[in-house]
Each structure stands twice: as structure tokens, then as C-alpha cells.
View 1 (tube, one colour):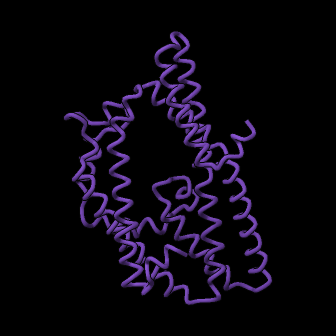
View 2: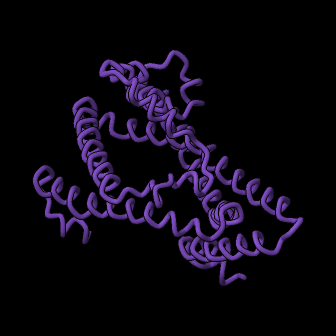
View 3: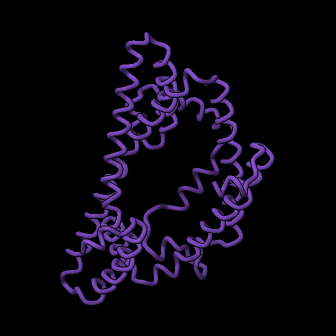
Length: 271
């Protein structure tokens, strides 16, 4: 057992994944009257893990952005750097979206034998409602993106995962002006947020140690509900994602490094 715990995290996750498939099959086929209780246990444990990950999002984003901006605020033109960063982010995001859409339309992983994959594996969500919402979108809705950057209530924005852009913008402002106050207070605030960031990294490391347990519970619950056939359906999703990631990693990013950053991609990856 001790040797198992000393393995690298990715090996622990792979072992947990294999055990989860086995546990799900056994629960589905042989648990009998105990199946509902076991399934409830899987879902409860999986929910705890997912909630723990969600718990980290806001404080980790807040502390990392504020400390990052504060560290460069006195060393460079943050406005110019921010503009370049935003341009790079938007450009690479558009390319990534294009690659993703291209692969989805080529492989079409969401349909299995003419049936929606989400219906086969019993995933929640209403595709027709999502399509309807997309069809009523107007070009003017892009302005809402800039509107969301300035939330009326920063705490409400932090609580809503869909409004994280407002939290990010606030953290950028906070970190920038934190370097513009009296040196005595600026040093205190910088030390405070650096300490918060390090604390959050420690908590994140703790949560990540439970990843094998969380993966086991989530996968075992899915296999118990849908059977091992779920992996035959999900293989196309996995292949689609891997193909898109490989194109982005082996084609898009090397082009950016070569023609924009003026860096040899091969040497960059070797470093």
C-alpha cells in the first residue's frame, strides 16, 4: 500500500480508473439490492471531490493574478504588456475554437448510430435549449462581454462561474494599484497576497492528492449507471480532443513561436 501511495499521481489516477471500471461492473452486475446504496456512495464521494476543486477556483485565481500583476507592476509597462497578452489570448482562442469546431465536424463524436451520445450515457442537459439560446444571439451581445468585465457586485461575480471575467478584471486593477500606494502599505499587501497564494497552493496540493479517489468514485458511478459500453461511446470524444490538442500543440503553437516570438520551436520544446 505504501508503494502504491509513492507512485506518481498520474499512475495513481490510471490505477484508480481501472479499479473504478471493475468496481462499476461488479456493482452493476452483482450488487443486487445494495446497488442504490453503492451508487449513492460513488456519487457522494465524486461530488465532494468536484466541490473541493470548485472551492479552489476563486481564491486561487484572485491570489495568483494579484501577486502576478504586483510583481511586474514596477518592472514593465503593464498597460502595454496587458494589451499584448489580451491580443495573444484572443487570437489563440479564436484559432483554438476554429480547430475544435473543425475536428468536431469531421469526427462528429456527439452522435452514435444516429443517437445523441448524451442520451445513451444519460448525461443531463437539453441540447435543443442550448441550440435555441445560440440562435437568438445577436452581434450586439459581444458588448455584454465588456459589460461583464465591470460587475456591479464583485462578490456575486466571484460566486458565479459564468462571471469570472469580472473577477479577473478586478484582480488586475487591484494588483496594479497595489504597487501605486505608499511603499510601506504596498509591501504589507504584497506579502499578504503572496502568503495567501502560497496557502492556496498548499491546499491545492492537498486536494490533488485525493484525485485518484475522486476519479474512482466518478467513473465507478458512471459505469454503474451506464455500463462499460460508455467507454466505447466516449472513445470518439477522447480522440476528438486529443486530435485538436495535437494540432494546436504541434502546428499552431510552433507557428506562433516561429513567426511572432521569433523563437525556434524545436529548441523551445527541448528547453
